[in-house]
Picture 1 (tube, rainbow, N blue to C red):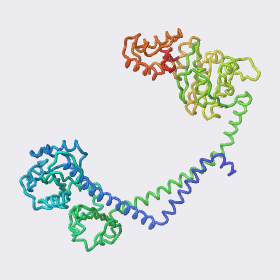
Picture 2 (cartoon, rainbow, N blue to C red):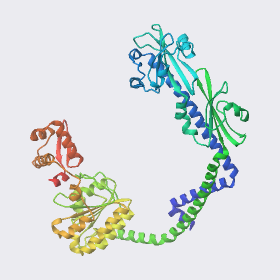
Picture 3 (cartoon, one colour):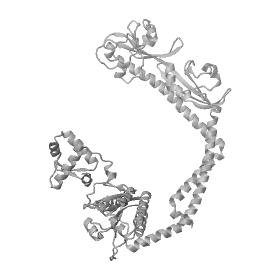
Picture 4 (cartoon, rainbow, N blue to C red):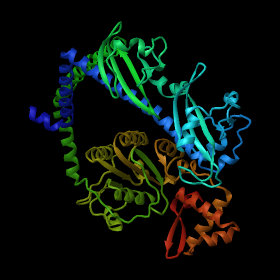
Length: 581
C-alpha cells in the first residue's frame, strides 16, 4: 500500500518529507534557547560590525573623493575664469564639469588672503589671512593636497581640505609645477553634514549610541545625544582598535555589543565606536524565538494536513483510476490516439492561445483547418471532428498521426463516426484530460445542430469553454453563419472568441489611408501582381517614411505580410486583412 502511495503521489510525498525535515530542524533549535540566543546575538553583532565598517569607510571615501575633486579642479584652466567674488553659492559650473561632492569653494591668494568664496555661508571668511595655518603652509611647501583634520570654528566642527594653485593656462598631470605658486583652493566639510549622511541612518534611535574620536588623542569629535564624552567612559570599556567586535559588561547597561572601525584623514586617524546594550534588543531576540515556535506549529499543522490529504488521495485514487480507465477504453475502441505532428505546411497567419474557444465563420478558405494545422506545428496533440472525409483532410495536409472523428451517421470501417453531441463532448473531454496540451477542431457546428437540440449544443459549448480554461487546450469551432438563426449565432458568439469578427475588429482601428492600402494590395494580389513599397508610395502620393510606418502598423496587426524576394520586398495581404475589407 505504501509503495503504491509513493508512486502515485511522488511530489506530495517529497513535499511532506521536506516539511518533516524542516520541522525537525526548527524543533531542535527551539530545544536549546541559550544556543538560539547566542546565534541571534552573534548575528546582531556581525551586522553591527558591518554597519560600523560601512559608515567609517563611507566617511573616509567621501573626504578622499572631495580631495580628488579639488585636485581635479586645481589642474584645469577653468579656475582662471571661475568667478567666486559674489559668494552666490552657484556651483553649477563645477558640477557641469565633474560629478562632485563639493558644495563650496574658497580661493586663497599666494599671500594667504581668502579672496573668493562660492557660498554666502563663508562670506565672513573673506579678507582673513591664513598664511600661518597648516592647510595653507603645507600645500605651499609640498605642492601636495592637504587634509587638515578637525578644525573648530565657533561651535562648528569642520574638515578643511586644500590644494595648491599654479599659474598655468593648460591642463597638466598632477603635481602641476608649471608656473609659480598662485595660492590655494580649499573646501570646508561640516562634520554635522557627514553625520546626517552616514551615521544618522544607522544610529539615530535609542537602541545604540556611537562615538567618533581621534584615535591618537582620545578627543571626542562627534557623539550620540545624551551620552558623556568618550574620555569620561573610556575606563569602563575595553581598549578599542580597528575592526574590534566584542561583548562586554558595561556599567549601568549590562552586556553590551561593542564594534569599532578606523578611518584615515591625512595625518590623523579617527575611530568610530558603536555600543549597543543587549537589553535594548531583547525584544528582537524574543521575537525570533516566537517566530521559531510559530514556524514549528505551522509545520506540524501542514505536515499533519498533508498526511491526511495523502491518505484521502489514495482512497479516492481507485475511483478516479476507474473513470480514467473507462475513458481509455472508449478512445481505444474508436482507434483515437494522442500523437503529435510537426512541420506541416500551413498558411495560417494568426496565433491562437490556449484556454480559449475560438469561433471561425467559414468562407471558402478553410481558415479553421489552417489554424488547426498551425497549432499542431506548435506541439499540440490534435483531435479533429469534421464533416469532410478525414481521409481527404489527411491527404491534403499530409497528416499521419492526428486523430479524426467523422460527423456522419454512416458507419465507415476504421474511421470513428459520431454525431451525438453528448458522445462528442465525452470524447473531447477524455482526449483533453489525457494529453498535456491539445487542440480540438469541431468543423461545421451547423451540421451538429441539425442532429441535436440547440439547448443541448449550447450547454456543451459552455462546458467546452470551462474545459479549455482548466486545461492547456485550444478549441476551434467552425460554422457556416448563414445556416444559423441570428439569436442562436449570438448565443454562440457570447461564449467564444469571434476570431475574424467583432473580437478582431474591436482591436483594429484603421485610417482611410490604411484601409485604402489594404484594398490596393488585395486587388493586386488577386491579379497575381507583386506590390512593393515604391508602388504604394507612388499610388497614394505619400513619403517613403509614411509608407514604411503604415506597412509596419498593418504588419503588427497581422493584416499584411512582407516577403523578401532577393532585393525586392513583396507585400501580401493576409486572410485577416481580407476579412477587414
